[in-house]
Length: 397
Image (tube, rainbow, N blue to C red; front, side, top):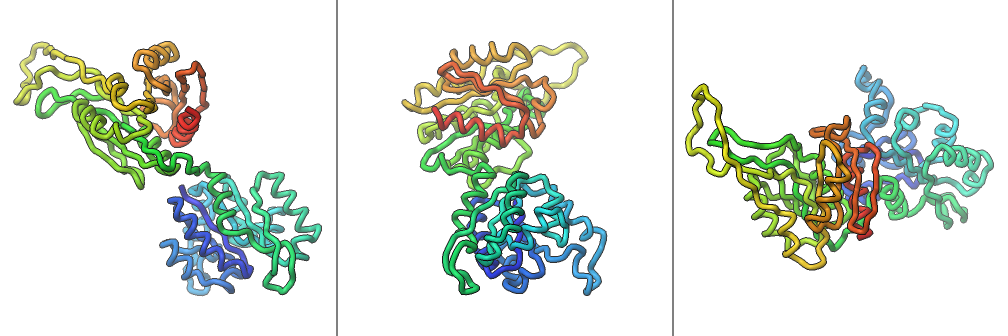
């Protein structure tokens, strides 16, 4: 996930560096935006060194150095579109006023107007400024628009006064960011095994049987589990995806290889999520040499591959097992039958003929069926969001 960290001009700006480091622990990519006044308290170099990214300080680049160009002129739009959240800490009274009144006075407030991502602000200012009716009216207006406000703490302020106005503690701000982004740690101490992608079953040395699975759903499940604190083992068939961070990956090619890999790791897992599209059949005797075209029809004798899900029931008592059912008709009927036949705790079913729910797309439309008879229909959402909803239900089980 990508977030923009906005830093406005107050003495609490030095705490933003600590906040950046804390948010990096959540595997967030952080882009820092500083107002001119913020640079009076902390240099952009500090944030550049911590984030490893360029710090944005001007709307049109450094005009004095002649670097203003078309790219810098529209950069706020690019940043607005690529972030998942904007957090402003500290947010001064002036920044809050500009946000509340729709004033695009600098890159940061322009970014606020341009993004559709959620916004979290941590105000910091003098106690009298905080209690002023104008500030409170601006805060009320921002809350009504859905901006998440992390209330300041009370105590001794830099101005020498005592009262509310001190920026909230870094942990409190980080907790709000995680809450808004849906980052949880409810799987800490658990091991989750996920399978993903297709398998390839050889016909001869140059041909094979496979399916259209891209692996995106399984990789999203593995990423979500790792983000939520689980030790995550990903057993992947051949895909063109980079593995998520903090995931143990095992690459396999055939159904037999996936069967062996799963059973080598399954005893370690509290949860097994079989998102892979494992081939149901393989060629009984693959040809040792390339089969030459001879002009007539060709028949292949197929045999069943190992049923990994069914066999898992013997591995570990109390282990939660989740299957997937990619169907083209009678989705609920087929999924519930598979749930019962394989003794699963939960199954994720989808109609792959639906637009936005098929192969090789970034979204999915699924229905979850649980062992206790519940049915949960989910709307079209990203595969990562589907993964998190799935993990929510697994956590309940």
